[in-house]
Every structure is written in C-alpha cells, then in structure tokens.
Image (cartoon, rainbow, N blue to C red; front, side):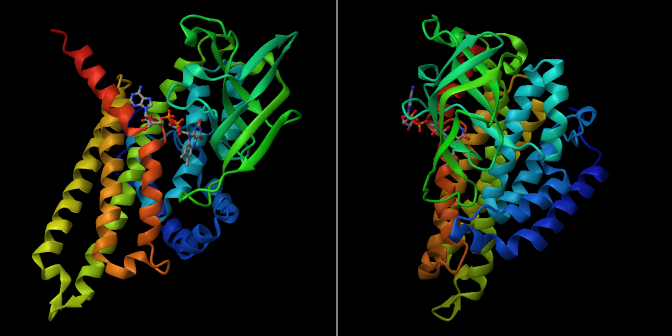
Amino acid sequence: MTPETPETESLVLDSVERFLEAEVRPHARRLDHADEYPAAIVEKMKALGLFGCTIAPEHGGLGLATATYARIVERIAAVWMSLAGIVNSHLILAAAVSRAGTEAQKRRYLPRFATGELRGGVALTEPDAGTDLQAIRTVAVRDGDHYVVNGAKSWISNGGTGNVFALLVKTDPKAEPRHRGMSLFLAEKGPGFHVARKLDKLGYHGIDTCELVFEDYRVPADRLIGGVEGRGLQQILSGLELGRINVAARGVGLARAALEDAVAYSQVRRTFGKPICEHQAIQLKLGEMATRLEASRLLTESAALAFDRGERCDMEAGMAKYFATESAMENAAECLRIHGAYGYSREYDVERYYRDAPMLLIGEGTNEMQRIIIARQLVARHPA
Ligand SMILES: Cc1cc2nc3c(=O)[nH]c(=O)nc-3n(C[C@H](O)[C@H](O)[C@H](O)COP(=O)(O)OP(=O)(O)OC[C@H]3O[C@@H](n4cnc5c(N)ncnc54)[C@H](O)[C@@H]3O)c2cc1C
C-alpha cells in the first residue's frame, strides 16, 4: 500500500487524537471497571471510518497504509487499549476477505465492513486448541449448497457484539498434512450459531471475549472464503501479520501511556525533600522505559513498512510484536512501582495498564511462538 503524504497522515492522526481526548479518555476508566461494551464510542468510531482503516477505497474503506494504521492504533491504545481490539479483530477478518475472498465475497462484505454496519472478528481458537490450530475439531460437512457446522470456539473477541466471523473449520478431518483439510468461512450469526458465554477476564475489559457454539449451523457454500476447501489456515495466517503489527502498536501505545504517567507523577511526588524524578533509582527506570518505547516504535514501523511493500514480514512482525508487548508489560510494572501505593489504586489508570498488558503477550500468537518464528526465519534466510 502507498504511504500517505505527511499532510494527509497528520490530518487523520489529529482527528483521531481529538476524538480520543473528547470521547474516550473521560469514560475509559469507568467503562473498564464496569467491563461495559463502549457502544456509544463504537458508533463514533464508525462515523470516523475506523472500521475501514485498511480496507481499499474501491470497497468503501479509507485504504490507509499499515504504517499509518499502526500510528492510529498506538494513539488509541495509549488512551484505552480495548478499543484497538474492537477494530483489530474486525480488520483481520476484512484482510482475509480482501486477500483471499472471491470477487462476490468482496463486493458483498467489504463495503459493510468498512462502514462498521457489519462488524466481527476471527474464530480460530477452541477450548483444546490455540497455538496448535491444526488440532481444531470444529467440522463443516457439505450438504447440497450449504455446509453444516458443528463444534465450539473459545476466546473470540467481539464474539457477542459482532455479527460475522472468519470461522476456521475442518472440511476434511482426516487430511494429511492436517492443514490441507482446513477451510475458512464467513459465518454470519443465525440459527445454530450460539454465543455460549462472555468470559470474565483479568483485564482487556469492555471488549467482549466469548465462547461460541455451533450446532448444525448451516452456512451457504458461497461463504467458503476463496471458494476452495483446504486453504483456510494459510488464508487466516496471512491476515495475522497485520494482526501482529496491530498488537505491536498496541504495545507501543500502552508502553507510552505508562511512561507518560510515570514521567508526570515522578515530578510531583516528593520524598526526602525533592521530586522522586531526581532520585537516581527512578531515573534509571525512566531511562529504560523511554528506550524500550522508542525501540518498540521503530520495530513496529519497520514491520508496517515491510507489510506495505508487500514483502514477507513474519519475522519483522514477530520481532515487533514480541518486543513491543514485552515492553508494554515491563513499562506497566515499572510505572506501578514508580507510583508506589497509588499505582495499586483503582483511582488511577496505572493498575489498568498492568492488567491489560499480559493479554498482549498471548494474543495473535504467544511471545514464545514469536521467538520461534523469528528463529525459523533467521535460519531460512541464512542457509549454511
Ligand atoms: C483476551 C483474549 C482474546 C483473544 N481473542 C481471540 C480471538 O478473537 N480469536 C481467536 O481465535 N483467539 C483469540 N484468543 C486466543 C489466543 O489466540 C490464544 O490464547 C493463543 O493463540 C494461545 O493459545 P492457548 O491459549 O490455547 O495456549 P496454548 O496453545 O495451550 O499454549 C500454552 C503455552 O504453551 C506454549 N506453547 C504452545 N506450543 C508451543 C510450542 N510449539 N513451542 C513452545 N511453546 C509452546 C505457549 O506459548 C503458551 O505459553 C484470545 C485470547 C485472549 C486471552
């Protein structure tokens, strides 16, 4: 994708920042504590076009470069990370349709994804299969011009509020290698598609994360993404690079929020006759936090630029995701320490950063897996 001109990008970023300060910051703490879906904010995000950020203009989206999208996500996550999740899962779904969908699927879905009229996410994980996606057990069996789906999905973001999902299933459970029997469907809610329950989480509140159950759910055969069976895993994994860049950008936003709060607080809190920012122990923390933030941002930008150039960037996206999210976790913990007891109080945002950060280590592929992906790519790119 072509990068935006600096003028266009700053217009977009300015309007996002104004929206965040006016419409999100005043409500984030209350909504987080109540674990309440931010329905009114989502309506405003629709009006801003955020649900179509990376969807091509010919399909009604803003067609923003991934690098610009990452900067938007950083800003959102610095105010309330959960909002970035509401958009991200939806845009991974859109990316799967844009890259692998038939023309008819693109025409039918992308314009309504772009406006946010149809919103959703990706349904891959199951109670017994997360990292090892080829072990999923949800099955779709062809029946005339439909498939009949049975199985269960777990930890699905936007599961309750969304209306359509990229649903990963087995169409041939006996296939070897296993991924050749996996297919991806555009599954709209309807008879046989149940939201079993909303999960109760440590953090990442506001966004609904659900268990979904499929009982003889009938999905029309023309909702098979790309119109061919057996390509589901690769179709969804190619969209996950964008997802990893988004999670990295969320890490940058969270690491930044933690740093900014720590810098501000350390100048007003005094001990032993001076602001704590003048104690060397606190200065060491601030120095490390700021360096982690800058390195995370550069890695994320580099991955986003590679993605926009159409290059294979699983290693770059993996490095950005791994480093930026570990940085978010470390900055959140250091911010909490710098705030002393106030860091433990629900009257500050610090405790939220500390609860939100671990989710980033797990989602879109755990950080253990990111390091394995990086190592595999290193070896593949540098054969002996
Ligand atoms: C808040 C939240 C939202 C989520 N949203 C979605 C969503 O929208 N859609 C969706 O499909 N899923 C979603 N997930 C699920 C997420 O993608 C999975 O949790 C993740 O892929 C890890 O899978 P798992 O939890 O089953 O862990 P497991 O796969 O059981 O892994 C357990 C541990 O073993 C490690 N491990 C596993 N295999 C290996 C290996 N080969 N080598 C080294 N270490 C390994 C892992 O890194 C981890 O530390 C969400 C999860 C959370 C917490």
